[in-house]
Length: 102
Image 1 (spheres, rainbow, N blue to C red):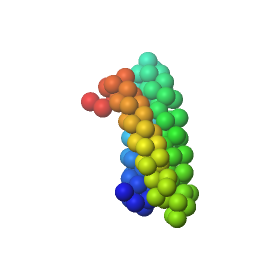
Image 2: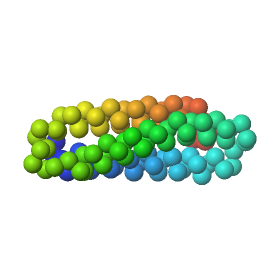
Image 3: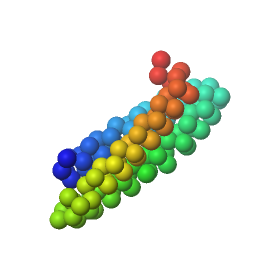
Image 4: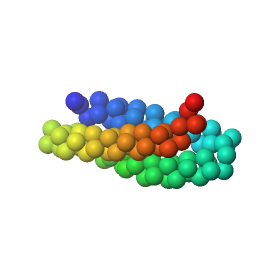
């Protein structure tokens, strides 16, 4: 995978997760107090994971093109880990606030 391909993949994932999070925040406005508290706790857990993913994407973007072959595996692995944590966080979030998605 090239640097540009990995960067495009990271940006797409981050954009998708940010959109999901924003949608959840909008839906939470109309829910009960208890549901809102559950959503806030889940969002608070997910937001740092999203920030970690953004940091990894920034690291990829700032990597020198001439060093790409040397650091490619490390950055791809780092992104896969950050993306996995983000997806796990999202899955945990959605299972804790299922009523927002029905």
